[in-house]
Structure formats: C-alpha cells, structure tokens
Length: 323
Image (cartoon, rainbow, N blue to C red; front, top):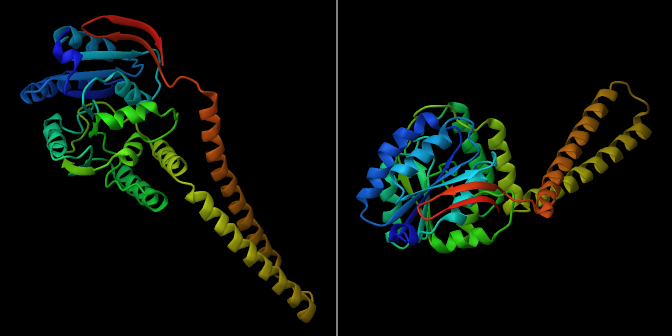
C-alpha cells in the first residue's frame, strides 16, 4: 500500500453539498498548496448527498489523483456536522484540517494552521481577517458568540469559520463521542490541552449560495447552550424565583390597596399586561426545557449519524456501510 494512503501526516476533510460550481477551482488551488508542503497527505471529500454533479466531479478528481484523494459518498443529505464526523472517522493523518469547499477560506492559508501546530498547539481555530458576509449574518454571528461566551467556558473569537486544525488525539476523542447534536469546534476546544487561533483570509463564495440561514444560526446557538452548559436552566430558575417574589409583592400590594382605597377602575389592563408577561415567560421556559428534552430524545434513539454508500480510495471500494 502507498505510504501516502497508509499513514499520511495530514488529512484534509472537506464536506461537499451541491458545490459543482466551486469544485474545479478548489482542485486547481488546493492540490498545488498541499503538494508544496513537502509532507504526505490525503484529501477526504465527503459528498453529503449532493443533487448536482458534485459526486461525478469528485469521482473524476479521484481518478486524476488517486494517490492522495479519497471520496466518501453518503446515501443522502445528513448535514455538514455528520459529514465532518465521517471525515474524522475515515481520516488517517496525525493532523486533521477541515475546510469548506466554497473557497471562502483560501487553501493558501493552510500552512498558517500547520505552523501553529508546529509550535505545540493541538487545536488551531481561525479568525477571518475581513469577513465578506452579508450584514445580517455578521450581526447574527456576533450575537451568537456573545451568548456562547456568557453561557459556556468556551472561548472562540470566530466560531463560524470552518478552517481549523486538530491533533490526532482530539479527533480520536471526538470519534468516541456518540452525540447526535453538538458543535464540533466547541467540543474540540474542551478536549484540547493547548488551543490557539490564527488569522486567515476570507473571500466571497466563489459560486453558488450559502447553505446557512438565520434559522440554522439560531439552531447552532441552541446546540451550543444546551450541549455545553446547564446555565440557561439555572438562569431561568433564578428568574422564575425573582418573578414569583415580585408577583407575590404585587398581589399583596393590590390586596391592601383594595382594602384601603376600595374598588378602582382602570387597573384591568395593567393586570392583563402582567398576566401576558408571566404567560410569555412561562412559555419561554417550556421552550428552553424542551431543548434539553429534545437533546435527550435524539440521543436515546441511537440512530446512525450518517450512511455511506461507497468510498473511493486507491486500495478498494467499500459499499453499503452504515455508521
């Protein structure tokens, strides 16, 4: 077996979902960078059930460079999270780097991450030098960062950047976890002994449209809060105690006022407003509790996180594998 395939020093994991417009440019830029490093490597493309020609383009690239290219084909679309986990599972390198296929993070910055690892860091996050996202995505990401910093012990300047580097022991630990819903960079941060961050470039998407939406960013925030901390439940419990005490004092005040002043007009809408506020607070609490219960529901089902239809690699072709 070829040494590049058997025990590469670097494994590059790239999830792909409907990226046919970007792939040829990605190939043209990525392979020269990796060849120029002068170390053994493999590039793992995870086709996440693409409905365009992405799978065909990946297969063609495998035929061009079978020595360093491997392609994992999912049976369906399981999401970027599952694609990265599959890449971690199939990776063989001592250092694993994740990268988006849309060229928003330039492949030419990969040596920056490796240089940081050479300095002894086992997890290297990235900070986008100049973000070229829309204003709402930039604002939403900043809001998510602030909420995460206040509810967990995880400190990441830019959690939305895919370009990251992981030591082998971190990836092995992540592979042992069986969580269906989590945030991989945050999970890696908790396992890292000496994490750091580097500044990388950020460009507009080469082609196509972003797969992220406001809803997915909100979902990410909920996964971060409920997956790494119980502080939201504790804060809501504290808020419930404060509101309950306040409500008790208000009822006592209104009762005394009724006994002293007598019946009054005009207070009905105030009571309605207070009642609506308390009802809304209760519904929010139920929704927060539902997030934690929902995580338990997904975990106890023990369903496979992804299903692989085929693996294209130099040694053999594996079919119908369920993970």
